[in-house]
Image (tube, rainbow, N blue to C red; front, side, top):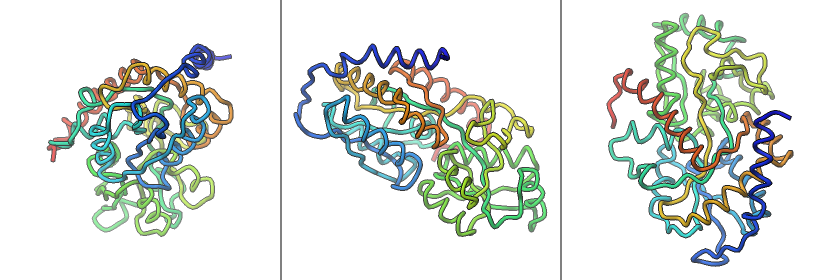
Length: 325
């Protein structure tokens, strides 16, 4: 058994007693609301619904998904900030809302360090570049050549949100491979992928889990991934590092947050319940199938991961010359 696997199982077993310990929220019997900052049908929504269903067992409470799409998770984050800190509202999100938005928006309406409490992380993932099936480009090199053959060597690349990691990646890929790429922002991955499936936009950058199902069905084609190594779900797809664009080994993360002031007993109990759930073989299998690398992170570990990722992208954003809007 691998060290990471053993660690995950030990943490889950250690939390069994806490997961069943008595706990009375301020509003007893009210279901736990799990906010998601993106629309139904996307990768974050699918992950949230899977975890919400499985968490009911160890928690003894209903967990319902509450989609609050818009502004790359900013709306959901603001809802979390104003929610009562009584254990009835949580926020499942990824790196964009926590690490990137506060750096690219002048007044995001929240600050993770002062408004939120890390509850637990459960996975990391990588972003990927995918092309529409109508594009005659079986590989990344073919995509580069195709773009150069377009008028003025210019082409649009869809991104799930403005001023997001994918937007900066569009800029970096364009610069490295001498392409005039234009980021086309969408309100989440679902509408972006819908346009890609309809051949309304030739390419898009998003998380692997957003593209994976369509890639396997031959409706889209993932031609490059980020991260320090190839993905188990996409073994034939090269990393951008292999292709000549290095420096993106720090992987994005998924975590769950609560409003500041949420009782420590609830945070600990929910975090241990999360560890138990992601240790379940069927849950791990489904998350891996969605393109995730499953790794439970205790609250302090999630916070450290968040800080490290924020630091990496702070340098990239500043170097790009981007001005917070």
